[in-house]
Image 1 (cartoon, rainbow, N blue to C red):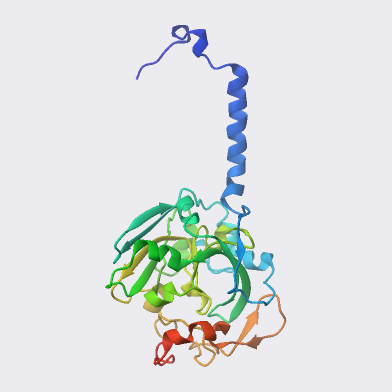
Image 2: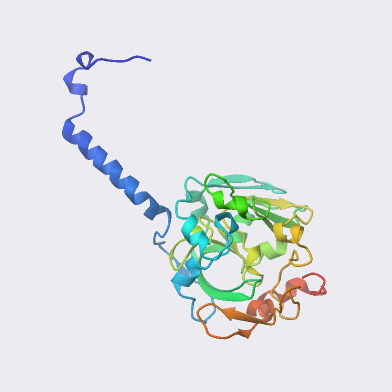
Length: 304
């Protein structure tokens, strides 16, 4: 390594002290601003979606402080506390498998794939609680069409990000990680299936699955995998986390169905967060008209 002494440098090559100090202040400001840019940034150019429910959304505070995200703790209030420093940039998404054009995209490229929409969806958790959330994103089919699935592609497998250094609470999650999920290809291509990048008009908070999460509103919430890094199009039904470790409790399809109880509790009613009392659970979470045809001829008590 060449080390130059101050006397070796002509005065013209020396950075003026005022410029040097200005640069340091500028970099310090960027460092301070970085967490704000990464999470909670206002998204622009969002169109309202015809798929939205007219039900009032669940308050933002409840949506962002009552979460299932085992990588950041198994209690509902833990993800908001432990995901604060989760780094979502740089971020890449890989899509491969039975496709003609596999791709790897950085987050900025993903955000340019399709116009962003706000979709106010009912969301139902298998544990018996529900919310109404104004997601921001675009149909998953927009990205799947770009990779051109082959005739062998019958299912779509998803994998989440996992890093013990950033997610130390995952040591006590009690589940194998990284989290994996899957859909049939026709479910993934359905226009209701959303790749979400935000909620309430802002980028996704870390505890809600930043920077990319799946949203499948007619299925129980555990199907909507968070912090996605990989999508594989495959020929056979993929292994999914909950249906692998507890198949008697969590089926592959996981369609919201009030007539199929969880072994430990009824699914006939639900508790809407922010409301008093319980309400009747709707078949397919109220999206019957849009998705029932996907399951024509299937016994949904067996294919739960």
